[in-house]
Image 1: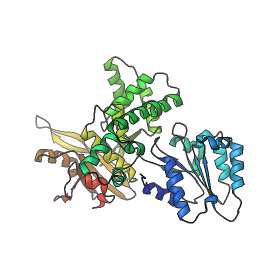
Image 2 (image 1 turned 90 degrees about the horizontal axis):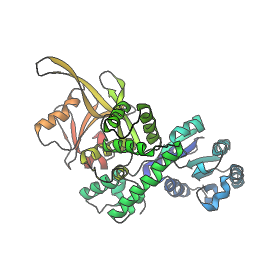
Image 3 (image 1 turned 180 degrees about the vertical axis):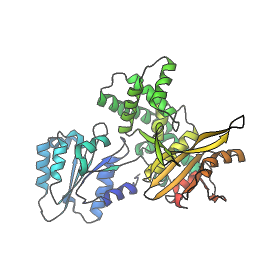
Image 4 (image 1 turned 60 degrees about the horizontal axis):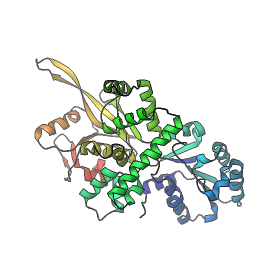
Length: 419
């Protein structure tokens, strides 16, 4: 079974020969090595690049262990470039295993006929590090777990109901989806989280109280899509009486989770005031299977998973995603006018495009429909407004131009927001 990952192959193709170091980042086990050494390598070959003009170095392979020495690696690279008039491509995996790899790569940038691509473990090569190490000479390609459409394309015989159920339970890490049984999927995800992702953070940042770190992660996983902030989380721990974490420590721990690509953060945006509101925020897990595994598959709430899946799909498509806030005026129980804030699940931007999106698991009656549409009806601009429901329905548009579409159509049609 081969997952094509065409979107990310296309990104690498678009960045070819741009005089930058292409750095493939992303959560562990999402397929960075496969993307570089299988899919992109095959593209180079099919586009007419001779195999001896593609320099492949796998620093996690014992056969390439000698090349972990920066001077030997650089000497090897130079020895392979024998034709000064031809173009060469350098592919390095697990680049962090080489000491002073930044110097080696920056030297490679000075070779006019060499194009550089690297990937690495996110315990040592994080997005925040790229900015420091390469400054304006690094070009990050952020690889995501499989989208739903990529998953379903590989398993076309599954019904929509079966495919969505499995994807929302076990997520989109490629190897997980290839395992033959639920038992093996669950075991793999739980061990991967415990032995790899969590241990990466503990070791990298020399965290002594990993129990508190784990408890915070549990809380964030169980409250996906809920507004929160470090102070609120501190109060939650204090009320439990078991763990004491200050808001400063909580904020730092959340940054660790983000840098390890486990979490994404959505800021609040005042739609009418056109400004960001610093707190509270929402957090979403990069992979649904990892989220469920962390909670021992005990809290598989379809509403939260659907909202998280919509957020991940929007990020996968290259949008920036915020949480919308709209001020409205209402009346209290005494009939006095009061100002209230209501929420739009996602304010989605890409260039000049903007969409307002509500995630509604079900709209069983008119009252629920009024509730879901209220934030959208109070945004008085010309950008498209969309409600996504967990039903396989035909797209419809009401008299105010608000679109309602099914989750299946949204996830499987890359142009669904433009319909």
